[in-house]
Amino acid sequence: MATQVASYKVKVGLAQMLKGGVIMDVVTPEQAKIAEDAGAVAVMALERVPADIRKQGGVARMSDPELILKIMDAVSIPVMAKVRIGHFVEAQILEALGVDYIDESEVLTPADEEHHIDKHAFKVPFVCGARNLGEALRRIAEGAAMIRTKGEAGTGDVVEAVRHARAVLGEIRRLQTMAEEELYTYAKEIGAPLALVREVKELGRLPVVNFAAGGIATPADAALMMQLGMDGIFVGSGIFKSEDPPRRAAAIVKAVTHYNDPAILAEVSKGLGEPMRGQQAADLPAEARLAGRGW
Amino acid sequence: MPAPNLLPPEKVPPPKDGFAVGVLALQGSFWEHEVMLRRLGVAVREVRLPADLNGLAGLIIPGGESTTIGKLAVAFGLLEPLRAFGREHAIWGTCAGAIFLSRDARRSQPLLGLMNITVERNAFGRQIASFEADIPVPALKTVAPADERPFRAVFIRAPLIETVTPPAEVLATLDDGRIVAAQQGHLLATAFHPELTDDTRFHRYFLHLAGWAAAASP
Image (tube, rainbow over all chains, first blue to last red; front, side, top):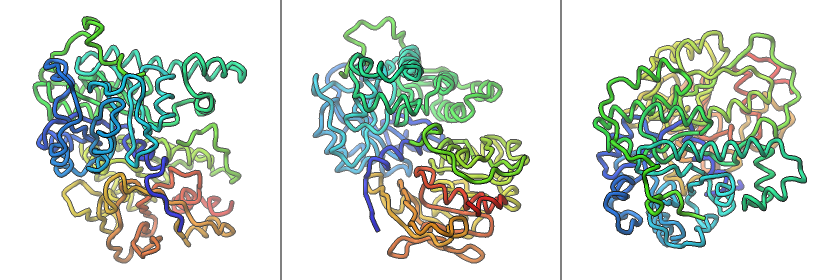
C-alpha cells in the first residue's frame, strides 16, 4: 500500500483536529495537567509565559528540552513548543524530541532578521504568527501548516489580536471581489506568491487553519475572536497569570464551543476571580512590541 | 482543506424532505464533515446541546481531542442523550469520535461506551508518525459497487481499535492486520479521517446506515 508519513496533509490535518479548541501556554507539568483537565486541545510548553518574558527582558530562547519532555510525559494531548524566528537548529532539536507542533514565534528573540525557517524541510508541522494576509501567505509558502494572529503577547489586551484578525479576514473578503487581472498586482503589493493568492480567492479562506493569539484573557475575548471568524484560540499568559487558572481555563474552553450563545457565555463568565492584570498594548513603546518581529 | 465552493456536488438523488443528520460540534473537524455532507445534498445541523439532537436521522462525532470532546459532553449534559440517541440512530465516530464511542480507552476519560470495541489512543506515536495509507474497505461496495479503488485513509495521532467483540465487527485493517475500522449495526468507528479526503464513499456508507436508501445507488 502507498503509505506516506508526515505529508503536508497530515501536518495541516492535525491543526484541523485542534479547531474549535483552546491551546494553553504552560510552564510546568502540573500546569499542563490543569490545562488538559480543563479541556485544552493542546499545550504550549514554555519556560516563561510571554508576560514574564516581557517583564524580565533578556534574550528569550527555546525552552530546556528536559522541561518539554516532562510536559510531554504529563499529558496525552498534543504538545507544542516555540523556536526563535529563523533558528532552524532549535527546530531540529524540537523535532528530535518529538514535539507535535513547532511555533516559530515572535515572542522569542529572533535569530534571523531576514529569513524564516524553511518549514518544508521538517516532519513536524509549524504554526507561525501573522498580522495580515501577505504575512500569512509568506509563512504558508515557507511551509507553515497553521497560522495564528500575532496580537500582542503577554499584555492581556485583545486589541492587537482583533486588529490582525480583521486585517487577514477583511483582506480575504476584499480578494473575493477582485478580477483575475487584479490579482497579479495585488500579490506583488502584499508580497505573497500569486498561486496562494489565487487559492485564497477560490477557497474564501486561508488554505490552513487560522487561530487567534496574543492578548486573549477572558471567555468573552475568546468568543469575540471566534465570532470574528477565527478557527480556535491560543491563550498564553491569560490563564496562569489569573487568580483561578483551572476555572478560567475551563470557562474559556466552554466559551469557544458556545461562542455564539450569549446565555452560556454569561454563565461561564461568572465568578472567575481576577483576570490577569495586563498592560494596554497602546502604552507599549515601539521597541517593546513583539508583533513587529518577523518579515 | 476542503471548501464548499471548490468541490463539485455529487450526482445522487436528494434525500426526502426532513432527512437531516447532525455533526457533534463541541470541538474538532466538524466543519469538514459538514462540507462532505452538503456535497451530497444532505441537510446538516451542528449539535452542541441535547435539544439539537431532536429529529435527526444520524450523528457524526468528528475528529478532535477526545478528552476535550468528552469533558464538554459531560459539562453540557450530552452523555446520556447521546447514548439514548445511539441506541436508536446511526452514529459514526472518526478518530476522537471512535474513541468516544468505545467502551474502553485504557485511561480515565468520559466515553459513550456504545460500541463493543476497545481502543488504544495515539497508538502510532506522536505527530511525526502521522501518515496516509491506501486501505481496502470491502463494505464500501454497498454504496459504490463499481468502485474498485482502495480508500485513502488519513491517520493523525490516530488510535487503533484493539479488540472488537460481537456484535461489533471488523470493517477494515492495515496490511499487518491491525484494526482501523469497525461496525456494530448502525454504529460505525474509523480510526482515520474520511472528512479530510474528497472521497465521499464513507459518508455515503454512514448515510445508508442512517436510513437514506439513495446513498447506496449513486
